[in-house]
Length: 222
Image 1 (spheres, rainbow, N blue to C red):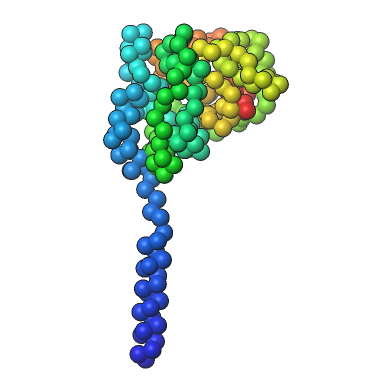
Image 2: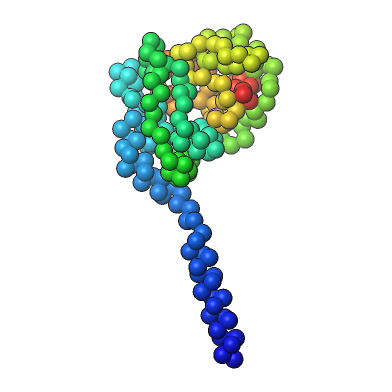
C-alpha cells in the first residue's frame, strides 16, 4: 500500500514538473498590453470607425489605421512582419516624394506572435467572410492592368520582375498578406475604411462582378 502511494506521489510530482515546463501562450491580452506599452497607438488608430474627415486629418496621420487589421491581414503575415518589418509602401506614408525609411520598430518573435493575435481581434463588420475566392483571374487581371491601370500606382511582379507605380502600397505578395474579402469590402465601401484617400472610388464605374474579379486577382498575387 505504501509503495503504491509513493509511486502515485512521484507520478503526480512528475506531472506538475512537466506541466510547469510547457510554455504559456499569452495571446491577444499580452499583445494588447504590448501595443499600449510601446505606444503603437501614437501612429496607428486601433479603434473604429475612421476619424479623418479632411485632407488635413489624413496628412496628420503617422501610419495606417489598424482598427480593421484582423479583417485585412493574414495572421501569419503579421507575425512575420512584426518581427522582421520590411516596407510595404515604396514611399514614406503620406508622401509622394520621400522614400520609405524602413524604420518601423522590430519586435521579438514571441512578442510579435502576441501582438498579431491582438491585431487579429480588430475586425470590421463590413467585411463578410467568403465573399471572394482568390485565384488567377483573367478578368481581374484585365481590369487591373488595362481597364483601370491599377499598376500605375501599385507595384506588382510581372514575369519575375517588379513593375508598376510607387505611390500606393506594393501588391507583390498580396496573397500572403491580404484577405481577399477585405479587398472586396474596401473596393465596394471605400468611405468606411478610408473617408479621405488618394485612390479613386470605383463604385459605380465598375460592376460588382468586376469588383469581385479584381479582388480575386489581387488576393492571388505572389
